[in-house]
Amino acid sequence: MTNRTVQSVTLRVPQLESARRFYQEVVGLDVLEEKDGRVGLGSGGREVVTLVAAPDARPRGSGDAGLFHLAILFPERGALADALARVTEMDYVMTGASDHLVSEALYMNDPGANGVELYRDRPESEWEYDDSGEVRMTTKRLNLEHLQGDGSQPTPDGAPEATRLGHVHLEVTDLERAATFYRDIFSMEMQTSRRGARFLSWDGYHHHVALNTWNRRRKAHESESLGLESVAATMPASDGDEVRQRATDSGISVKETDRGFRLTDPDGITWWVRS
Image (cartoon, rainbow, N blue to C red; front, side):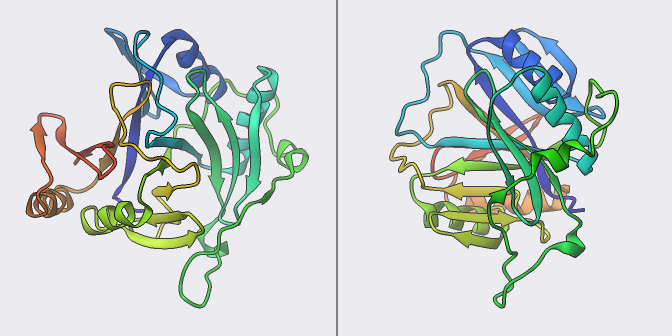
């Protein structure tokens, strides 16, 4: 497993309590910290999602770049089946369920209308690659009845401690410009592409960041609106130093804080880099 990864996302939500219940009771995350209108949730003591109460914030504009979905990775198929059982028991509406060859995924929206993917990876030994070296990914119907058969009895209330943020999928205004940023500044590698989308990662993972232009967003992301506030990545200090230097050399503003450093991508999406 890579030691460079996406760590967490911060979301601005209109109703904090309903969002907290979703991530705690449906996804199965633990409340790690709750203070001053912010709730941090995660698993095994590791932050996955931070929710920020923003009842007066404007909704994300229909043309704004931003979050397509955040993707929470479960460590095995049985844990994904347990998540499906919690979704069903709480009568949550799913927007999709897909077999992507490298993974199996459930899709829904949280109470703040943020897209959420719950997924599990197939073993890397089962991933397939085309002649150009790109990992094969597709979208096929997931057999939910078969998945349900791998669930625990009774269904556990919480997710396993190894549950974490697996990737983020972003809506951007210019696909090639965005892909160039994540390749050149974050040193990610292209893993696969499809019409209107690019999938990039560190260290051969199928993707830590996905980018798409499917909904033809034309405006930069506004972090003060509802939805995505920021994404945090974690990596060794030496890799962080290289990201900082490449950003500075490219004229990208870097803000240093005691929580790491902060920069924004070409669509105004804020990233924190932490060691």
